[in-house]
Length: 444
Image (tube, rainbow, N blue to C red; front, side, top):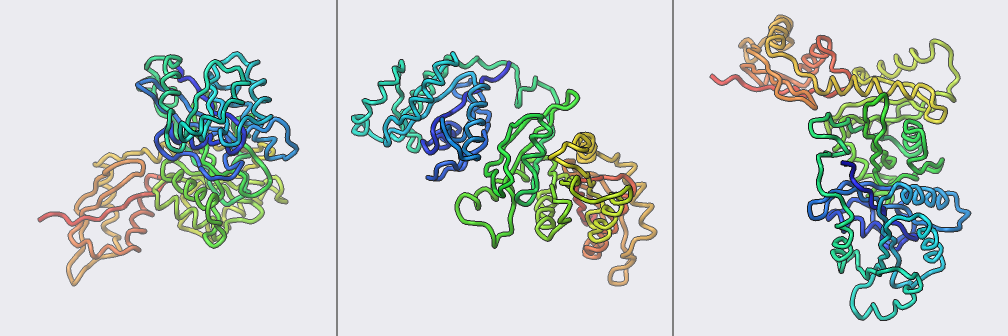
């Protein structure tokens, strides 16, 4: 059963993100007392009294504006209205009824969908006295709420509840029970490398706000993209700057959200600017991905602006892998998000990395391999005694973890771990994924 979509719309800074977080019971959207903090549509699956729905936070809806960012925000809000089954129209009780509220109300009367009119920032009964202007909206009922303090939000949800279908058999992201979950892919990188443009290109429409201005994306936004009947859940994230350049407040929180998106993904696509090449900041982001033990693909974006011949791509790869040999297992994809050139090559690469991320080596094969490398093991002795690998086993997947049982764990230095990892990758690949190599002493 398809989950109904509830979109929260209204002018900028009326408290939409605060209400979004209040209904979810946790802080998902960025909340700050600044108009225009939320720009993209922010989705979350939640439930109320046993009935599931998808809640959508939106950017502010300004009926008339010449500002290009506000124009895109308006377009995003209008898309959220089109996608919605139910709409919560939120207004500001402290500011009173504004001309823009009347224009939005006129727009909503034409769409023939259930609309719940909520007046926010009504923190007490005393504050209700000055709200008579809102009755000009001719709404059947006005909900006087405080999203910040939770006042009367349950009354709004109680009246929404009968419109929500009873729990069916659909699982997370609309899947039926037993269906494979789509891989979750976080698109990460420095500001202005084309992350939102890439997801829009993959989706084939303007699902996300894009702009040549660095820092346009602030929240982490989930987008389900279908390619040849397979689902891929992409997460667009804010650009990750160097700490010294991160402003306090909104941008600082955006970076934290981007790092959290890495934590909850299966694969991270690190997008870099082809003209700049890999920078120190890109290597730091690769470090975050590796620490989080996630699969990784490096997308070389803006390849369309690089002067090249038939050898340029191979030379570029060789240059990166020779400069940074420790990332030689990470695949490189050369793309142009702007023109769409080669972007569909990401999908088979994602599937391949997911297979590697979930790969399990049979114990017999693993032990035959460890015995084969034992003869050329760098640590031949420890305190005058021979170092032995007794056996190995794989402990898990996503990421793959391998335990080697030896007689002297202290003899296994970081260099020897790299030797073991290098040989495992030569034997089984594990392209694009981290390997957890654990050394244990064999119990006597």
